[in-house]
Length: 258
Ligand code: UDP
Image (cartoon, rainbow, N blue to C red; front, side, top):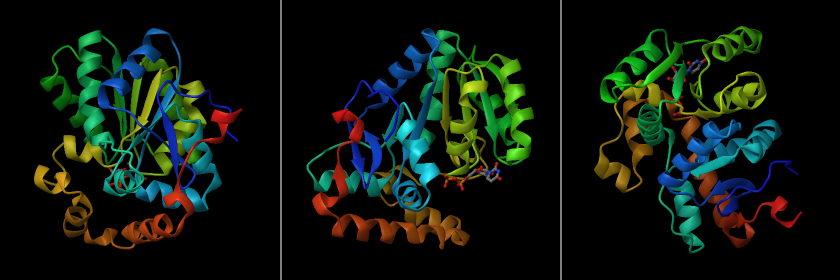
């Protein structure tokens, strides 16, 4: 059972994985509150792949349970919730990287970009600074998700004095990295954003809006990045688990009943 305090918004679970019924303004308000009150908050963006991985990897499940905010990301999770009458919009890292940066620029909070291939984090910092003048960039670093490198990377982030950290190592590495290190980073907010650095830096293209609106991003990614096919088998597995689970796999987190 998680020790995390109940979040200020309604939380449910999809096959045991927490998902908050949050909107983008609520996540931004939570991030702002964490920075202004010197708290620490991990944000995770839960999609169908996360849910399937968490069934097999208890450390990942635990990290997701301990997150301050778990957004519903991806068409699969939204579908599972809608089947049970919970109507929620998806909200992932590739949206939040823009809105959190916009808010940070407006409020004077500083940001750090960690992950992706060499030079990409710097390009992300450059592009977001052009888009949001006044954005305070505390640092940008490719780094690595390897455990032997994390002490040095964590020290660099701490020295930078950043308020908000974006980590792009892909799941589950990025979310486990944040979960292990959040207490020594000095940041208030940390979020794993997957392939979003590649989108912001123009290294990869997001699915066009009409495909995203129809929940077809998976098809776009399969066409653009066919080597992902094996990973994407998580999607039919997720659907099967949801269709065969009692209550459609939707529940409430245990700590609500503490
Ligand atoms: N990545 C990295 N180091 C690694 C593995 C991945 O920096 O050891 C980066 C990779 O360059 C990409 C991101 O992590 O920018 C992961 O992207 P992916 O599309 O796999 O993530 P998803 O959005 O599916 O979680």
